Amino acid sequence: MHRRRFRLWLSAVYLGSSSFMVGTVRAQEVALSFDAADRRLRETSASLEAADHSVTAARETRASVKTLRRPVVNISAQYIEYQKSLSLDLTATKQAAATSAQDLIDGLPGSVPAPYQEVAAEIGNRLSQALPGLLAAIPDTLSYRYRDDVFRPTISVGMPLYTGGAVGAIQRGASAGVSLASAQSAQARDLARINLIRVYFGQLTAQSLEAAALETRDALAKLYSDAQRMEEAGLTPHSATLEAQVASDAAERVYQRASLAYRSAQDELARLLEVEAARPTTPLFVVSQALPPAASFLGGEDAVPQSRQADAARDIARAGVDLARSRFRPQAYAFGEYNLNRNGALPTEPDWVVGVGGRFTLFSNVGRGHALASAKAREMAAAANAREARKNAAIATLQAWDLVEAARRSFLLLDSGISAAKENLRSQQLSFREGEATIAAVLRAQSALEAAKSQRIAAAYEYDLALAGLLAASGQLDTFSDYLARADFRVAPETQP
Image 1 (cartoon, rainbow, N blue to C red):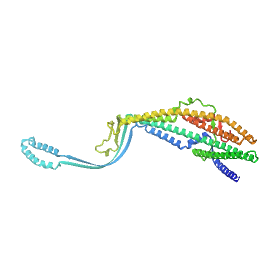
Image 2 (image 1 turned 90 degrees about the vertical axis):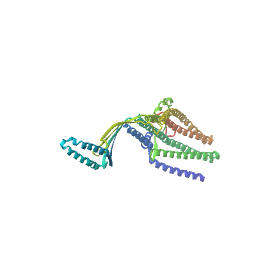
Image 3 (image 1 turned 180 degrees about the vertical axis):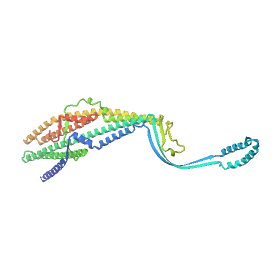
Image 4 (image 1 turned 90 degrees about the horizontal axis):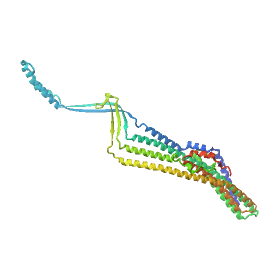
């Protein structure tokens, strides 16, 4: 007896402290409908923010390569200090000059009248004698050294004329990169929303299961109390009381586990939405009407993010093939340069220059044929992945449709069976109090009702998750709220079926 009182005292202390904690948390709870939670997730999710930044980066990359065909204009400035040495050999020039001068001197007497020829010959002799001395004064080699510094600003222009398709391949690859980033962002949004559905309705499920476990615990505790009174009155044996006690203790353990699961679900949703505590206001739901045939959900495989990612990867691989092919082709370009400081130009430099050029790689240190074969193989692999993505999307759609339909039928059967389970329990309890039924029959009825309630809650949760999976697999996840609005069965934690 003392041990039982001690257990009751511990339970009272635990429930009191739990009530205080719950009251504290609820004072800070944020009531959120599913749509409000969805908006909150889009505002706070780091993964969605990262996906958006990736899309922005891909778009900026695409914009950066749109102008690859435009000319590139550079302005540069150099400060140059230089020295120029020149060496000129004058030996041949001196010899030619001596020969020419001697011929001129020799012809000098004949170029004057006869009376003066003797004088001219004398002068010529003196010049002939002086000529070697005059030429000796001129060195055989003339050396010149010049040192200077100059500031050299220039403008240069280069523009591709023909790149063998490389520019177009790069631009197509950048555009495909935007498609890939957009598809990855869409997949991140779908995954985040599916996770929200799992966590949001998971908290409601845990709360409903806790409420069902509490009801069962209280019912079995009352049954145990009734058994004790009936044993004291001599109406039931002690074994029946022990059986009721075992069932009551088991129900207490189930309730404790359900409470822990509920608190864990609360923490998960609060962390996901970055709030202190969240209270979902949109209950679990089921649409009693069967979904349209599974085939009606097919045909949207091209729109699902996985297929879009595969298509973008294939386009990137195709651009890689074109880029590899461009390495086998010649390239042509135009160029020009203008010196902004002509006065400081080096002697060998032009004031300006324009022209066109071309290049063709005869031999490369990279196996261009192997590189092209590798690019083609990647393209074929990407195309195969795109086909596989569509097939997987169709399979996932059909499987999810089956899960939704199974959960719907299970929920409807359980919904109709709970009333019968309740009536059976009421009948067994009444019979037990009148001594016409055993406590085992009451426990079986209580267990059947508890199982029906728990299974009904689980079926509703399974329906919501399967529906989200079906809509995601068929590219229609944005219509989830439409199905929620059409639901004619709602399972709220505070509503006892």
